Image (cartoon, rainbow over all chains, first blue to last red; front, side):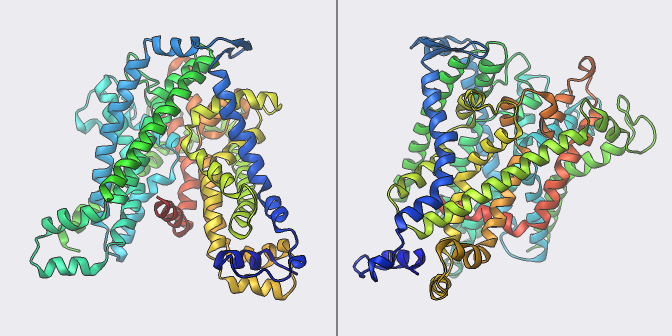
Length: 306
Length: 267
């Protein structure tokens, strides 16, 4: 008889409400666990175990083909630090992240302001900006790979000799691809923030004679801060972990100038070095840095709100 | 909206749509160095159809992986969301937090040990193994989404199940399921798009080229014959990859947007 729903409702509304006849409760703890068991199994086998395993691999001599050959700490970490591609990759990844985040969020904010009002026309615009985000990152990269190729490119009128031939051109060409693919997505997130700003705030500003620029700077931007921060966190995290776009567009070239950190992990493990232990050590370092970056971002966000 | 904004907006919309339109047109237009050298036609799609194991095989691989991922994700997150929203059990909060923590760990960090682990489980080079891993990556969003979907169901609905004397599973199946259907559609759509489009996971986990999903096959195709890239076939591959996603997006746009909104609220 006793549905778990009532059990829950009683607990949720007030723990003081007496449970109606405990013999009627069909052991909700076990039932709850039964429904949660598939999630728990998935999380355990495919997440918790791998996290423990990668930590162990990072302190083991573990080749791609040889398997585990025992403890060797801290050799893997030392090798990672001595890798001649590490610091160029770190520097490039950070540069790419800053450039992408600034441009992407700026454009996304402009797009969100542009389609802020609801009408048939803005609906069409929103859909147009969003369509690229339905594509996979790999598909979008392949599309731009053809778009940038000397043979098939329709972009000759731009007068650009080579889109991927020099380190700088490769960086900016990739940024253009990422902006195209993700601008609509961030526009949508900012749109939610914009629409949660109450209309009477704008009304009050208008009555006080604020110009449009003043309204934007002193009302829209401050009230949009948490949405902007969310976008920044997503964009920074995503860019620091960039892989598909560079693997497909540049393969790290020209002259290893566009190798990102995650590409370095991939190369260490499966391409050339075939050293899973070293790759595991680098990915543990990435995880640690990412946790620190995210904690700092959350803290910065909270500090500003206080 | 004022007229200048109309023009800027329209111009931007054209700019965003033009790469897609270009790819579709270029894939059927004549171009030197491709299978379609003169006149318009489907020559590039023929190249694609005959590439190694044939596009039918790669499409099948992608479809199997995507369908399995969607089914696993829907099943696990439906039960999981029900458990988190409706029951109290020891370890409930911990399990939910650990599930969300999947988001904090980079793909690459997990793929290195998963490569070893799937070998140990006998799932190396297996589409099922790939789908299981992709499902795990979907769980934070899916379980979160289903949990808030169940929590949004009005409690009178649950009480009516009680009056009818339903067990918890029958209540889930007959009464809750219709109520959380929009959440399920959103979860399924995101799982499909993620599985259909994922690149780095099959790149690491699938080494047998006959079992490669479509994105991997199209990317590999570029290194065909002596490093000369057939851009026409690449364009045809992009169109084949993009078409299902764009159609699904247009058909289910409302659900797609809602998925993002729940993510925004969470933050």
